Length: 171
Image: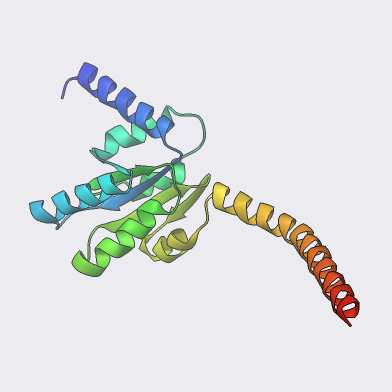
């Protein structure tokens, strides 16, 4: 590959990394064409972009971005497919479900919620991690809960008093 072509590919990888907030590095070595096609279909269904990259070009793209991505460099060996997503746990759930059937792809590393997860043993933690929006929703729900309880108590109290007064009036 010519140097100009490499720089174009590096720029494209940087653009994709910048447009998604999370990415997973997976190993697809040992998968046949049918399994890779199935993985691509599942990625498309779950709004995950799958990109097969050369490790050296991925390292160059990560080096040219803001931030330190050096913990991921050791994971960039053998065949690497990168799964990009704006939902932090979506690729982990996809990999976990896909592994139940095919035993591949293998998680090498992930960059999720501005943290690094290295190794295949991190898949469970990543699948159960909550996104920022889910956490914000839970906090709002917790904040609304006491107000709902007070309003509910006031409404039921009014109904109870009304019922007692109505019963007394009928007697």
